[in-house]
Length: 200
Image (cartoon, rainbow, N blue to C red):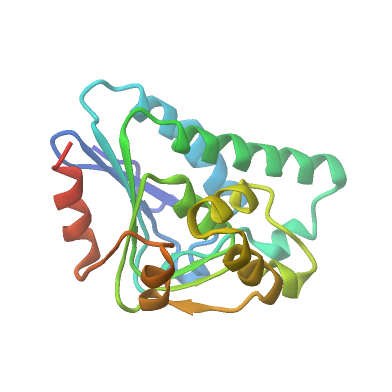
């Protein structure tokens, strides 16, 4: 069962008890846009409430996991709309972090900004060798409002988290594994994630 493939997000029950959530706007670098966050917020709770779903895997297409908010879109929002979007994303990621299912980020490529926040909200992070990670807000004069400032220090420690936030530098999957940002390095990443999901 899935939503139409022209949607920004695709929900597919690929094997019994496992839901695959795929970001499929590779031509736009899989942004966590207003449309994407809204689709997730409207559809994901229904899947989370299903007793037969034991694990949820998030992944992207091509060489991008998710690239975070669409900055051009954000510049067109007024204060009230921007606040609503921030709160919607924060509520969504909190729901992922507190889900009763095992949640896995199958990071197939670039995992940037809000995309990294989403991965941090998952129980496990599995990355392809070609994955890249960054929180580029410092270069843009913004900071994430989706929980990354809290979850990243808990995961890799305050000094390393501050370095990533302040420098906006990009790190490789191998370095991400070394500092504890990800749990596993594997290709094909989706197959490895399915094996972890099967361990419920």
